[in-house]
Length: 239
Image (cartoon, rainbow, N blue to C red; front, top):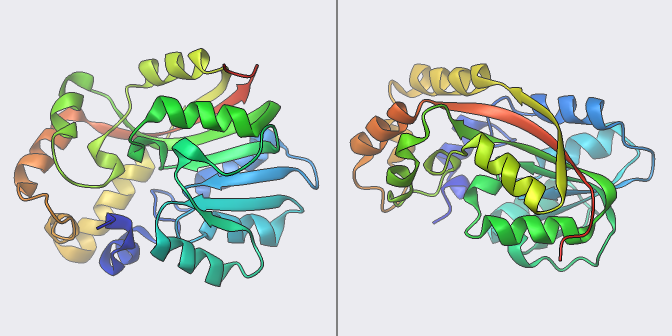
């Protein structure tokens, strides 16, 4: 089961299904200054909150993609008429060089093959297009491999080592223009969850297969997770 399909998880995380809701989406739009009629892609669009916000406030052409049938159905219901497809990021159906910007908001950490996903993003993006990444990172990278062993489908399972991510982006044809840390948004989300439910246990109990939730939380706490925004620009086609 996809953890983000769970009704309790959606209630806890909010319509955007990520820390800060649309706050970093708005920050990225402010920075990138896309032009009217520019084509954007929401990669891992979830229930369609980003698509809905951009469609209502900007004259951009935005499409969505998610691997979950249930979440795509929700996104299509919220955004009638929008092109939202069921697909993996590692094998997108879109043609080459069409998007001016790709949003990957709390989604790249969920990829089975991150390198392939970045190659596909490069392929469908126009030269000098923007890749907007908001996701979880680890202040203490010592425990990253241990975290990956837990069978829970959440971005908290695979926090990024930011230096490795930036090197990988460069290798795949992207130049990082902006890096900002928003650890406060993750802290606020976790605080809200504990305030609402009394602990994190109810959230983890939604994750089928994650039988050792206390140990998962212990290792996660040791990794000292934070939240970041990275905006990178396509420099060349990766081949």
